[in-house]
Amino acid sequence: ADGYYEYTMAECVYSTSDYSDMVYLRSFSFNKVVDVQFNSSVGKFVGYTEEGVKYAENWNKDQAIIQQMKADVDRFCRHNAQLWDPAVRDKT
Image 1 (cartoon, rainbow, N blue to C red):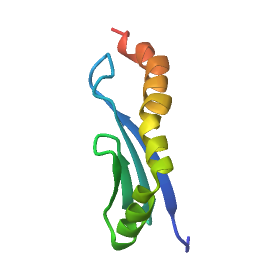
Image 2: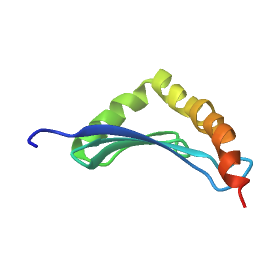
Image 3: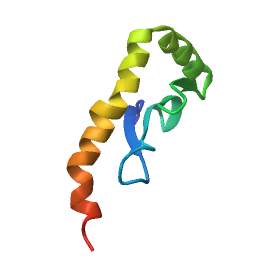
Image 4: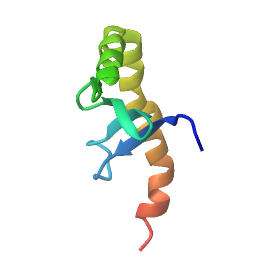
């Protein structure tokens, strides 16, 4: 039961059937506290803790990381929404 708990979570948030308002959120947490998060509508990482601010500053300097995260809106979010959303949305 002793130890540390570190995890990451990817979320795709949207409300329209054409996915035009799709937002990709990638959160990095430590012991249930979100340290840093990428938000595709902001286009960069935002730190929420002292450590998270440091991570955000470093990751935001690396354009390869930023471009990959921005591309995940299409590669991860829209791709999976197009596969799985009709199975849920079309049910009446």
